[in-house]
Image 1 (tube, rainbow, N blue to C red):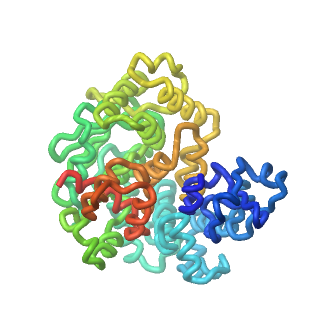
Image 2 (image 1 turned 60 degrees about the vertical axis):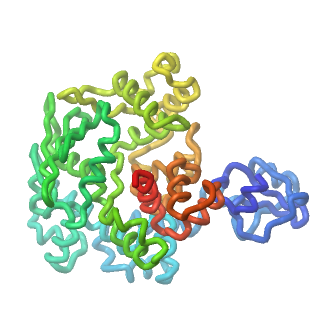
Image 3 (image 1 turned 90 degrees about the horizontal axis):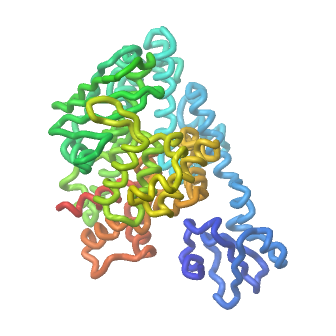
Length: 471
């Protein structure tokens, strides 16, 4: 605890409080105030115990606000983001966000970077396209009317931004309703081979098959099992849906969103690459991997299950355990593929069901416990997907079995946050050791210091450092 106090480590906020007996205050581990001498420190479990000891809260780190989950800056940016998503047309540009929030340009940019790992303009742009997608599927309004309704002043700008974020035109997106096939347009810089190699790294997967430039995956589309196929050609992806039973009318739209995330098309690596190019020391990280995307796990519970299953074991054994879990709780989707396990199916298991499958009792307990928490409404993964990074990390850390590494891995690989840092990840420390030619693998504090050079794109840097291990 003293070590984490001296490091001002925010990952330990909520685990303990630091009481400084000489000043009579108590602080969060992340507090940036001058550090007390260890002999003057007493640790507390919560604010109540610190108050009973006669201490008062620090005015700099505001520990009581943290424990009450109240942060004025977080409240401002989350409320503003909710308004933007609800009515993006109410904001003509970033200047309107500044006016409504009462914040200056620099402060607003800082808060959006910290809480959403994006700029205010990126959040507004994504909200407009998402609103347009809803209107295109639920109304018959002309495309131009949709563009104006979500806040665009010109049709060409709307079309350009829509294609960039949705990988198809607005007219093509509207045709998804009731469709069983569609096409995506890939960016010129898209790096196909590494994406497919990563997606196909588990050759025995029951939920994903990759053959050459083709992939097939089991999915749930509105609750119905189906197989989503994608043929990746030169600049395009031809997708099709096969299902053993009836599908909802918006199945293709759901499949479209699934495929965008699976191929990493919902986030643009260009800003990260520009930052790397500006530093001769960092440029080698991307020289052989320009255009590399971070494939996402589209199903949040699948991602959560993978994190718990894969903790502290080899990758090959993690693949084996996941296959056994899929056989037991997945739903056949056709052609030998299964959908990933659902929270409901896993919640119905008992620990004794998984122990014969070589799950440790603790791993089985964590997995089933997380599933039951979700089905009981204690953890809403869908809602969590629209929250800020700070709120998401806090809620994930409250789940038994998830620590800082788990939370950041999930935020990076499932929810698309771009500045996550999974401290303690074995691949990350090996990658840092090789890339910076270190005499030994870095510890947690050195990892944080080295990765600071990549902020605010540490998720991208982490993924690239993983890939360097194959060079």
